[in-house]
Length: 501
Ligand code: G6P
Image: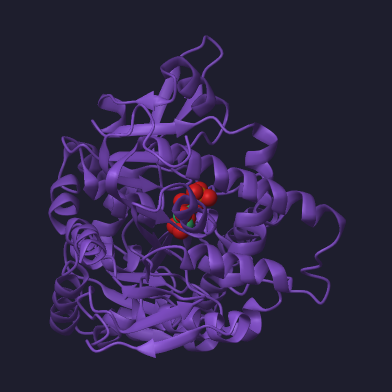
């Protein structure tokens, strides 16, 4: 497959990501059930949509996916993929596990989100070398598949920290391609990034610099990446001529390393306003709203209780526990809010194969229970924690939100911060972490907090609840306008255009 397009090699646009647009579960009777993938990456990339000749290359994530890949020879193209042509790679389970959980989710994700917490972590010892070799093999499997599927001179968009080595590997196999890389995560500051073993840190950066262009969600993450290129590789970073792309597409920076120059792009992904508004007004959402209203209940004044809404994957970086602490502080310091507000917290299972994620999930449950025990009354449950993923119910909560709580420790963008103001019926106040990528755009109309400061977050929740309705609605309208200014289709087209320049 090296050097020339393979037999399939017809696609002119390809995207590659670990998680694809669908994932399958396999029932005991052999039935495969498809489910849409979660997270910002899938939301953004879904804009490539059906009816194009684009091919989306992704990994089989579990037994269901592997079975689907086997039954179809890895080429899925059906109603279940939304008509999208998908090539699902059946990577050996041990290679996949080591690459996905071992390296991508436990090392690279932890590094970019600065999640290491004890003096004992990380330690790169015995097993690490073997895992890294699997990460290389997994990246090579993607590079091989892309080299096969891509037509002459095609454009390839490689996504995220799972696939940092692919751009360099693909360039070796197919120098004719235009290769872009996009990071959906934050990027770590050089002092933190350099906790990776030197040769690994260098390999990640060199892999990404194999792209013609590598792009980020905010100028902040782009600048940190170039700082790492300078400090780790001794690469040359130059300021470009055009303005860093508030609307995306600008080329603020270039990185030159070993005679090749990679352009650095900034494309803040926005919410898909048209899709969300339409989807949020279907019957299944109305049904869920009626149920949720019943659970939230009415306050002492006979009116519906106010809601503080959050919707996340149960993800360490989302800071769900400190959000609960802040809510508890609000109820402790401002007893006048008891019985009048409900914290609607949806925390959907994520990466449950990792012990720290399971522990964190349990901790979220414990803290929510403790708050309900301490403050709850016969007619009032202060925290409504739901853990079963249900998109229609998420939209129902968005519509009912008086306050949206988005307080991640560190987050590439956070689309929920953009989605809730778009969907909320009455307009919501947004309590927003300054460490979320969305902060760069939404700060002027949000109540911004240091995510580690529980007292400040509690105070912001109170301010948010007490904003007068007209101010709140006006701010929410401005938030929604900003949030939808770069819809996923625009975001994707901008990247394709910039790559073809
Ligand atoms: C983030 C990452 C995505 C990932 C998503 C869900 O948004 O940037 O690459 O797909 O989380 O995580 P998961 O591990 O379930 O794919």
